[in-house]
Length: 425
Image (cartoon, rainbow, N blue to C red; front, top):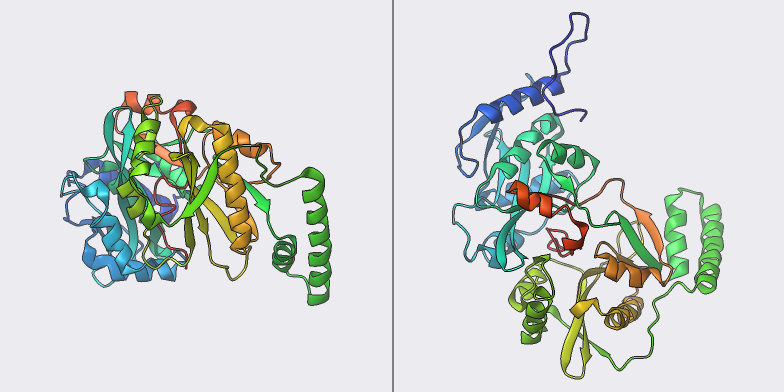
């Protein structure tokens, strides 16, 4: 998709605009003219190519679940089970005090089949003492012949009512361009687009990389063996693994279902430290968040205590082995009082060891503020970057949006948005 802006008036000698640009221009025009409430179930007819059935934009309903799951499966998105719809839009704690008219998403419907979808996942954030209602754009998927109309789905998402903060946490380059049309900004938190990781098992990791090079079997075997030796040597020479200093702190491991009232005490104490934008991490919300229907990953909660007092926790996700790629353990969340360096170190050392026990090839971290990333950098992690920043936001008010342009007010990581709400299959 090139540009989604209305094309300028053509010069007499200029080529005619493409079909895609004409469709996009028409959609934007209709969106501006339409008085339809974006939370309404009334359908808005959209222009498409002459050889395709007409598409209608309407609000999604729970009855659309099976059709959306099939659409996602067809085009390579995680086909979350029907039970996950109930989790996101019926048992979600963020719905407790929400307006019942709040939409769960929108679909493009030809009357014969769904050809497009975007979900809207509600969540609760806190800005100092203020409680905010947030919405995350989820699983945007459109049939190829209708992709010029995807701007209509995004428009419906950003025009919905009852929302203080709009989030996009899994953006690709195409979505990055669309987000700018709706006046979103990239997350200002430094280095969110840079993944930090450590290699746990050099031989399996090198073998996976060698296979991706599409070499013949003898060459692939040699490349894997040489790569394994090089990685092991590099790890030893540069001491690429988390290490703790002497400490009286203790780390224990529990299940997400065992999260108790100690986590509430930590949550309230952390919120009181300073004014910061924080997703709800109350004990009940944490238990709900990490109870994921159909998930094949293993989740562990690492608790760091000083005596009996909980000083911080990390939620670690061990993903199942993929068909082609390294098996990963990922930090889903870390929350530490006063960002204490010794607590962070103890949690990462324990997570590294747990990841090795789980049989993972790689232990990786995405996001989190500089106070946490600085601790990780001392252990010489490898780095890789996303092609585009995956996290975008828009606040409902101009003054609040400007306040969120300050990197220091963010504490963004995989826990935000929908990244850790989807099952690993």
